[in-house]
Every structure is written in C-alpha cells, then in structure tokens.
Amino acid sequence: MATGISSLWKYQAYQPRKETAMFDRNKKGSATVTPASSHQPATSPATEARPAATSGPVAPSANQRRETAVIGASIQIDGHLRGQEDLIIEGEVNGTVNLASHTLTIGNQAKIKANVFAHTVFVDGTMEGDLYGAEQVLIRKTARMKGNITSPRVSLEDGASFKGSIEMDPDAVKAAISGVSSTRSTSSASSASGASPVTAVQSTTAQQSKAG
Amino acid sequence: MSADAGGVNAPLFRRLLESQSAERRAVVLDLGPARMETVALFGQFRCRLEFADLDDGLDQLNGEADPLLLPQMAESLLPRRRQEAADIVLCWDLLNYLQRPALMTLMARVAARSRPGTLVHALIVYSAPRMPARPDRYAALPDGRLVIQRTTGAECAAPRYTPEDLRHCLPDYTVESAMLLKNGMQEFLLRSMRKTES
Image (cartoon, rainbow over all chains, first blue to last red; front, side, top):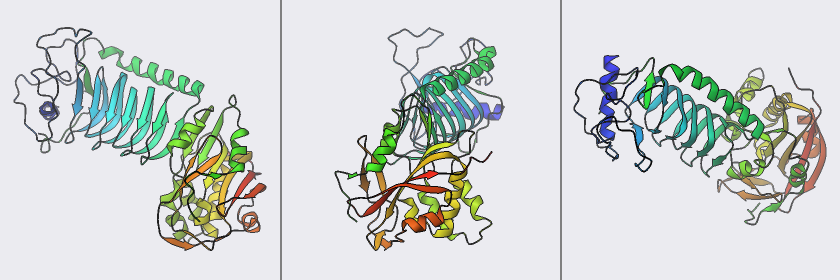
C-alpha cells in the first residue's frame, strides 16, 4: 500500500495547492489511503492549474469556487473509486467509479474499463463498461466507448464512436438509476463520514516509475 | 448515386416511425454506427437503442470462409444479447456490402434476436452498377427524410440484390413493402416471421 500511497500523492502536481481535496490528511474520518507525513509535489509538464484550497478543515462556503480533482495521465488505478466532488480522469481506471452527485469527465487520454455512476458524465476518451448518468451523459466526438448507457438525457457528438445500448425509456432509466444508487450508498455508508472526497478503495496500484 | 444535401424522402422509414407508439416500449437495433440524429429521433419514444456499428466488421464477415465459424462471428459483432427482443432493426445500406453467405448468416442472427413481427428497414442499391466502396452515413430526420453522408470517394461494384435475392438470403423475413427512391435505391420494409430464440 505504501507504494500506492506515494505514487498517488505525486499526482498532486496537477493540483498546485497546499492541501488537496483528494487525499487531505486534515480531513477527519477513515480513508483507505492515508497520505505520507510530508511530500514534495512533483512537477510535471502536464500539470493543469487548479485552484488553491484553503488551509485547515474549513467547510466550503456556497460561493467558494468548485474544485475538481484530477487523475493524471500517468496514473493507473485498479479497484473501486468513489468520491464527493467533481473528477477528471486522464489515466487508467479498472473497476468501478462512483461520483453519485458529481460530474465525471473521462478525458481525452483516459482509458477506463469500469462501471461508472455519476450525476453527469462527459466522455472524451476510451471507455468500456456500463455508464449510469443520473442527470445526463455526453459522448464527445473524440470518445471511443463500448458498453451500455443509462441516463435520462444522452447526447452523442458527430465523430464519436459508440457500440452498445442506450436506455432512453424514462421508467427503465429511473428504475436502473435508483437501483444502482441505493446499492452504492449502502456499500459506501460505512466510510462516508468525514472521508476524503475521493478515495480509491481496496486494491489500489499505481506505477511509481511513471508517476510525476 | 449522389448525396442529396436536403435528404432523400424515405416513405417506408417514415411509416416505421409512425408505427411506433410513444407509450409502448420498443427496442431498436441499429446495425450502423451510432448517430446523434438517431439518438435524438428515437429519444422521443420509450425505447432502448442498440448500436452494432457493423461497418468495421463487414470485412471480417465477408472474409470468414468457414461456414461453421460465421454464425459465431456474426453474433460477436452484434450487441450483447438481452432478454428483450428487438422491435425494429435499422440496416441502412449495410446489406449491400455483405456477400451472400455473410448476409444470410448475419440476418439469421438478427432474426434470432427479433420477435415475430419485428420490422427491418433496409436500403438496397437498385439501379446503379456501382456504389460507394464503404457504407454511407445516414442522418434520420423526424419527417422521415434521410440525409446521406458519403464516407469515401472510392467505388465498387454494387450487388444489386433483387427482391428475389433478398427472399432467398433472408428466409426469416417477408417483404412487407418496397419502394424506389429518388437516389436509385430501393427501400425495403421487411417483417420477421421467426420466433425469438430462448
């Protein structure tokens, strides 16, 4: 796990802020991945500018600019990824992704082999799996997707490659989303309180050699 | 054949749309690539849309010489089988690009996923001896017109399947209606007669 932890910390290079929303040691509650006591944020040419977080465990105000976590292109995650903030994935994820009330962006460089559940999903990269969007799903022109989409609103841009099914029956969508939502809230209830906004649960691996 | 920017009037496609009820759930199997127009069009119905995107698999199907392996290959190119049978199958112009063994095998697999009475819509090259080397892309409009987008400038010989050819190659179907279109294609509406496989 220590190998995974130090590698995961390195992708904070994409978020130049003193404390990250993803693995914030000051946040209370259990977290499967515990950050190291000190770290040197690695620099990366692919760093994206991210808004700096406030220090200390301050509850975000309604006007505070929304922060988006990023999983960089060099990161690979195997397991269950869940969170309580918006997320951009540029790396590889195998397993499941659950951002029940937030927006997930599967970036241009991302390779996802997972079942995904989020409020809103934008797909720009490669994905194989079932996708549940409680609000909407947008498959962009650079997307290469194979799987099944269940969402009340689905858009497909010209040029997008999609093979699979799109469930558009409102009754079937409602039943499916409710079913998935209740299953996932049951499984995450035990670690919900004070947990880091985004956690990778169970087997989490990352390649150190590629990190940073 | 030339692409018509305003769209080709396709009366049988319009008839197919009009036969759909907004209240009754339907499963639509589209053998072509996923198109936003198709999603938008069928989004007004209570339906599940399945996209097979067979364009890339055509060469595979035509190239499979072993008749025992062909059904398996055809099945693997179609979306994962579910309990619900397809109510509508959209072939667009794909059938023109399948050689007879592949055509018979693929449509037998499609029939196995259909229920008795499933409607199949297809566009068959009729008058021109040559056709585009790859399938065109079709944007279906709500009024039943089809906007055709060429995907290649290259051409190849057109099989020009006759209704008799289709009856022979598609024994699980009856030709419900056929109509000649302005662009030289023949539009077919076929109905499945085969029982759904369990």
